[in-house]
Length: 414
Image (cartoon, rainbow, N blue to C red; front, side, top):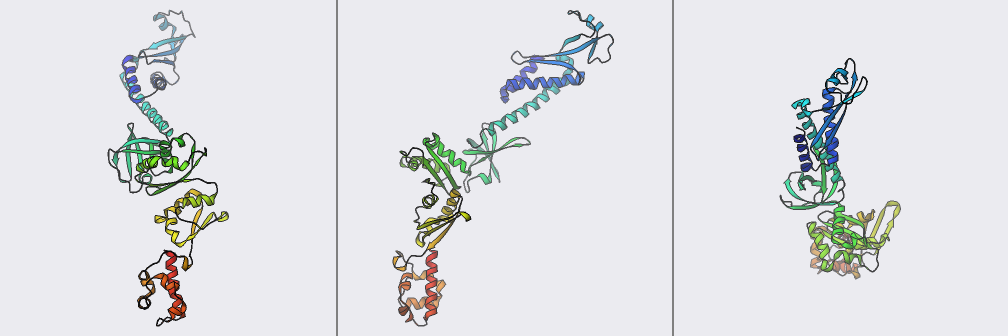
């Protein structure tokens, strides 16, 4: 029976990956409980386990007495004599006997196996917890095996990882069976074992991808100073080289863009701007908001505010689609960024807008009067003198001022 039991335990070691020393301790505990169930809580015993030999030995120690009051703790000298008393023991000596497993009955042995299975599962869960705890902030690669409403389940080395909706890249499409790369963000203890949360939207995933694709970053020659990201849309990465001979941005982009393109593909087309870091906040802001041209950067530390002054025609470049450039610059710097548009002198404007674009604001009456007077564009009206506009029927001083205000407002919005 011993070999049979230990063989079943050894099989658990192979299948579950439980350390032999850990299993040894578990077996001792389980059979110790079994001895106490049969001989009482005060029983004195030793459990000797040899997994390699497939052997479990249980030794019970009792005190030799003249008259037995507690058979679990005592044994009579007469009984010892009947068993041979090879060591010539006497009253008050300790008698040690080997207890065969069969003496416990099949029910207790079965209970021991069940208890061991439970302990093994607990150890397995604990090992799994610590395994993934050590992988927090690192990249793992797994296969998608179930897509649910609020999360995606990923198989990683036969373990279940969870990619919640809030950790997914917005609008990214996932397919069952596809391989997926993500960062281990959190490991929690759950009722049925550890819950491993992974993320594709975390900034740290982008950092780890750069470390993989750019050896200079992994080796510490180039340092990522800051990352700002709107997952699936755009990211800005500020880098700095500790070796001035190495171009930090060029190294991250790679020959013909091969390095950065690899990262972009992994992130489902997320646009990535790599910029040279500067401890000078004004310089960092200018680089972050490029290619928009900035006239002035004003830093107000007391309000944690940065005012960016730029010509109106640069606004769309500076702000970016859906304000993404401003948002990412705020994340990079930790400051609130306000764009203040400066209107160029009319004579300096290098673009014009058809007057039709202002028809709704001007109203049909004023619009058609301007058209009939051969004013077809915004600049033509703004450059006209009071005398020229005053010749139009119904254009008094107030009307002229109103028209100019409407066009200048539209100019600022552009």
